[in-house]
Image 1: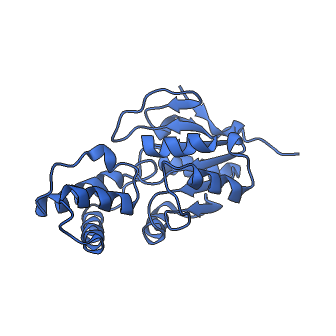
Image 2: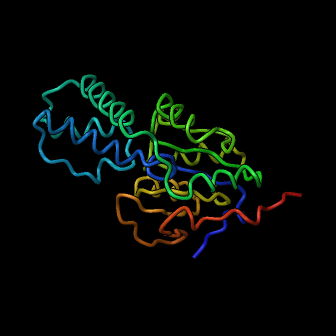
Image 3: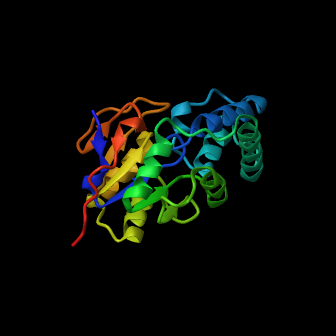
Length: 218
């Protein structure tokens, strides 16, 4: 099965776990910090698709509140940066071709991520910025995935009704956000299973996503 994005008016792309394989690096880093602090076992599902603040909250609860939020934030940030420096930022299969196709066809596109602005800019240095008319990060909205606001904001910035947007995500948290905003969704599971749902298309890879029939607005 291939899914053609071109029949929609705009594409909204998640970043971590969807375009780049950073979600696993985050989880490895967070689990390492939690282990060093003697935390209770973490529910990894609560780490997928979350913001830094939500992940810090999970680790804080698992350590019994023994550490200040600011300290946890710093330790996790340092651990993630070390892991990225060790491994590098790897694109998910099909991501580069998809971005190139979006640029070539002129399909309106926005990046919608739970990462902060500083981390997003680092990843954009790898992805390139040409495909994205706008980027919505955790620093740009007061409520985050799974709240619909990030995707609703991206659609508004593009001047497109969310019902005419297709969002590409790898996590249930992100899908809940996009679907709550009214978007059709394409799920490309990475670290968690994704069930079928109305207006949700579950694919095995971005290599199954095409942009071949861009709608021309009169």
